[in-house]
Amino acid sequence: MERILLIDDNPDIGAMLDTVLGDTYAITKAYSGTEGLLQTQQQAFDLILLDRMLPGKNGEAVLHNLRQTLTTPIIMLTALSDKDDIARLLMAGATDYVTKPFNIKELKARIVVALRQNAAPATSTAPAAVSFGPFTLAEKDYTLHWQDQSVDLKKKEFDILKLLFQHPGQVFSKEALYTQVWHEPYYGDENTVNVHLTNLRKKLRQLDPDQEHIATVWGIGVKLV
Image (cartoon, rainbow, N blue to C red; front, side, top):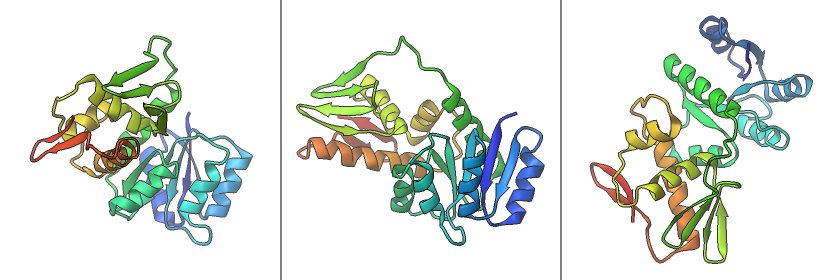
């Protein structure tokens, strides 16, 4: 049985997750950031659910500490809806996030996907690089290259850009991007896709500030140009 660590000071959330997830996962609960960090030192977990608002050491600080030593999937539980705040959490190492009050079906789906992706073996048949015009995506280290410069990409940023590189000029709706990159049902929340697209645009501009390469097609979606 896969092991999940819940770091949240609200005992009601712990009790609810015991009820809805306890038959599928072994759930360990920690009620503060310090306790959560101690738990990760004492045993291994397959996934961590981390509340952003914690007493003492807050969730962002805990996330930073965890990412010094662990590659375990971490799903943030947050009341935030501001895209810049969510982008900061993702850039700091969060695998995904769920906004409170969360839908339990959505949380279950995100847990399943995060665990599946973490367990997926690397394939030797994947291409070493994917190119579009002057840009090259290096799959071995998730980097984007342009002339003699490069930027690092997060896994989902890489996957989005790879999909766009493979279909230049094709318009993708936010739903299509989500279902093809996250491989899970789309719940109508565009925040996750928007945050990743915003980060990608910033990184593309770092390399080529003279042109916008991800264009918005109003009312439809985005395309690579």
